[in-house]
Amino acid sequence: MDTYTRILKKTMLWVASLSLVFTLVSCQGQAAPTPTPTLAAVQPASGPVAEGSVVPVQYATLSFVAPGIVAEILAHEGEEVKQGEIIARLKGQERLEAAVAQAEAERIAAQQALDDLYENHPSALAAAELRLAQAEKALDDARKRLEWKSYRRASDWSIQTAEAEYILAQDAVKKAEEVYNGFSNLAEDDVNRAYALTVLSDARKRLDKALANLNYLKDLPDEFEKNVAQGNYDVALKEVEAAKRDLEKIKNGPDPDALALAEARLKNAENALAAAKAALEDIKLIAPFDGVIVENNLKVGEQAAPGTSRVILADFSEFEVETSDLTELNIVKVAVGLPVTVTFDAIPDLEISGSVKKIQALGKNVQGDITYKVTIALDQQDERLRWNMTATVTFEQ
Image (cartoon, rainbow, N blue to C red; front, side, top):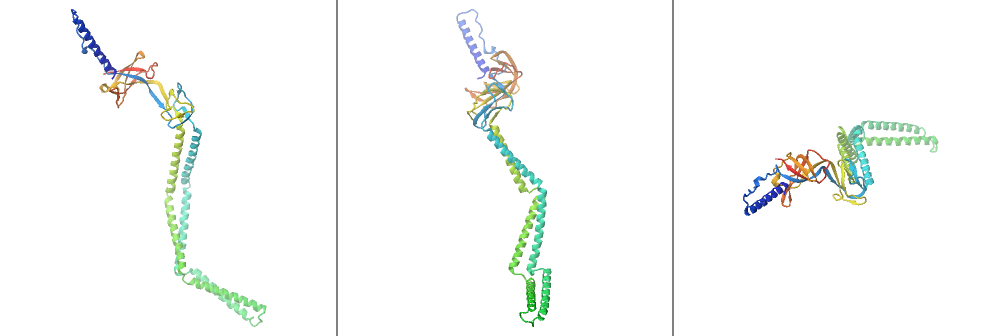
């Protein structure tokens, strides 16, 4: 029930009581009866009237976001703090700083690995081009060997060389026979005859070897040799294909797969570093704005829990008023920007003009009445104002 409604009810009660008094006086025979006042004679206020309280424009209830043991308190009740100053700290700073350093080292390593991919790309591209060239050369050689194995064991040049070696071996045998024939009538133990026979024997061995080699080169290869040549060709072909794929991947920049992996590593390292820094910050209770510590129930050595161990911080440089009993019957008469007049029980000589700053969207049931909180911006400040002082707000119409 708002102040205006209570005033109206009190007025109606006063009128009823006064009417009863006048009636009793008339019944006692007074000569000139006094007219009974009516409700229409009472002039209501210019608009709804509501009670409220003085609150700082900026205040906050702070608590640690993570549980822990309080290690130190740096700002106590009544002390002023600046935005960003540490009010209190939990234990574990050294451990968390080490985690941050480790995460930072991993981030640097991940960034370096990513940078290396770009810096080493020219060398990697050159190596890929060289690999392809070597693979194509090996494939060409394997193709030639495969073709030879399909029809013969050697090239024309190899066969011609073998034929030449056979002819020379024949000539050597002929000459050795001529020499030996000159000593063949000598005794078997004759040194010259024995030497000539040895030379002839060596010449005939070389002739047999040259003939065998020539016949081998001229003969067609067997299936095993063909299969080996085909296998070598297939391997060389696969190597060329792989070299082409690798070159295609990096011709316009670093390998996309390696690049994606390096970028993912860096992103993960950055996230880990951010998490480590956040954990380090979570053990600090930091002032979000300039203000005064109004309440601090933290104690060194005690367990602090989110939402229970708290610090209240307020900026007393500017106050506003919040109403507490404006009902649904009168909230429809109030709009943002509506002028108001505010008085204060504790400071009778103080009257401040203002305007509606904000209207709470959700009404609350208070002792059967649906009430809405309305925030009043004051046109001026007064050094005598204190948090939770009682105020009366008259809304203009």
